[in-house]
Length: 106
Image (cartoon, rainbow, N blue to C red; front, side):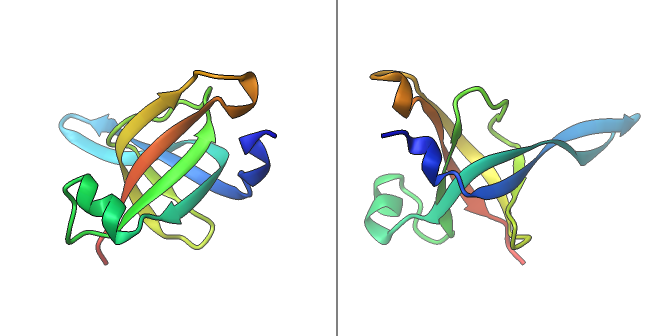
């Protein structure tokens, strides 16, 4: 069974780009299919993150997502990519990127 059947959300990926001189702004680089869900307290503690809202996301392994990128889901919630793990072992049906995300403060 493929993990891709759970990729039911459209997620906008943004990356910091230089606009002029020292000025940078987030610019959209892609819209990807994926899935985002909140990490429970035990998983956050294992990562050493106690106070912040932490989420986990899964997207296709071929997507260009880097630490520091910004992701915006369909509900316009903004997340920052803290960690990217490539899961490319096992059968071809489970290859994906697993992301650790921090929810942006309001």
